Structure formats: structure tokens, C-alpha cells
Image: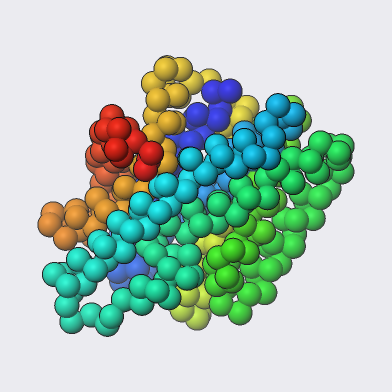
Length: 336
């Protein structure tokens, strides 16, 4: 399935772009050209995490009688737990280094609190969420096996409505304000949808999916601006949430475009290899962004309209090289 590899490649590059764009959104003066550039890039890449979850659903929810629960957990533990433990320790140490050498005047970092919240570093929340999603996958497989596709589609639609309403009604307007061991519940509809998209070959007109994608991006960017202007950035960030009323259709439209195109992004071999490096790029790139911002430059040192994608390409490329290096070293291979 070429679209699976393609989805992982474009999603991880979008994660890198999003994190670079976020600097402009948070630090540029509201409403300036640089701020709008950051806002548009940020809004245009908000589908990245939902696409990762949908790809996981497409790959993992297919019932496999030969793969019992014990074998499934052993495989997932080997893939996720070692990276989770290694990079949690790495980024806690990295945070201590930054606070001691870069910003000794800053308030003490709440290490234990952030660890208990499932966010030892800003991007690691995803691994803490996905662990619990994997934990329940064998039970979801059994449900999928005993549910017809129409019933599963209805359940998925209802789950999206409930997740969207929960996000909208959350006093903090933040999906991740709940305890980290419950985060996976909000992402279940994306997980189930990934399986449905693999099983149901419904063709949606390309013009419609492109229209929905572009409209959702525009609505996300404008919604964030409007709420930030009338309230504050934290309130405006509702439109950036992965379960907001604009990001849900954006994510579905994007995955449909990828599924229906289904040709190698480059050539099959290179695409498959890049897809295999996805986790390592996700884990490593924030460290490289920190180093770049500290010792070189930020996206706001130039025109953000072009600096954000250029820096994203540079960080993505360096992350690929480091991940490939880790995979070539027996002692570090399991961490990426």
C-alpha cells in the first residue's frame, strides 16, 4: 500500500514544519506578515497527527488470528516502550541542561509534574497516548471482527461527534488537559476511520476533497486569528486542536487524497525506507530545532513565508541522517 508510506512521510515532514511555524505564531507580533505566515503554515499542517493515528488504525485493526494478544503486545512493546523510555530520559536531561546553561534565571522546570502529565517534552505526548491506544487494540480488533462495516462507520461517526463536542466543551479548550492515560479515547475515531478507509473503496471526487481541505485550512487559520483577537492565544488554539471542527474534515480530506492517489511518493524502495525512519525523525527533530534556534537562527530572523519551509526541510533532512545513524548502531537501534 503506497499510500501508507506516503502518509507517514508527508505527515512527519508536516510535524517538523508545524513545530517551526509555531515559533512564529507564538513570538511574532499578532497580525503581522510573519505571524500570518506562521499561522497559515501551522493551520495547513494540523492534519499530521490525525494522519498518523489513521495509518496506525489501517495497519493494526485488521484481524489477524495468527497474532495472539501476547505476540501483539510483545511486538508493540519492542517498537514503542524502548523509544518512550530512552527519549523521556534524554529530554528530561536536555531540559535540565538548557535550564542550567541557557536560562538559569527561569523558573524551575516541573520535571515530575510534566512526567506524570505524560508530557516530559512537548512532542512526547504522542507516544504516551499511542501506548494506551495499542494497549486496547486487541480488544478493538475483536470488535471490528464482529461488526459489519455499516455499523462500524456509524460508530466512528458518533465517536467523532462526541470527541469534537468534548473538545469544544472543555473549559481549557485543550484535548490534552485530561489525564494522559485517557487521551487515546479522543483519538479512537481516527483510529477506526483508518481501518474503514482501508476496507471501504469509496471514491470521493477529488475536487470535493481538495475543496474541503483548503476550506478547512482557511477556516482553521482564520478561526485561530479571530478567537485570539477577541480572547487570547490559548482560546484561539481551539482551532489548532486535532479534534476541532475544522481539523477533523481537513484530516479526513488529506488522507482520502493520499489513499486515492496511492502511487509511490518517490520510488517504492526510497519511500519505504523514508517511512521506516518516521519515528526517529519525530523523536529527534525538537532537539535539532532547539540547537538551531540557540546557535544559528530562528524562523523570524528572515521572512517567515520562506524561512519556515526552508528550515523544515533542513531539520527534516538532518533528522533523517541522525535516525539512519542510530539505526546503524546496535546499541541505539531500538530507540528509534
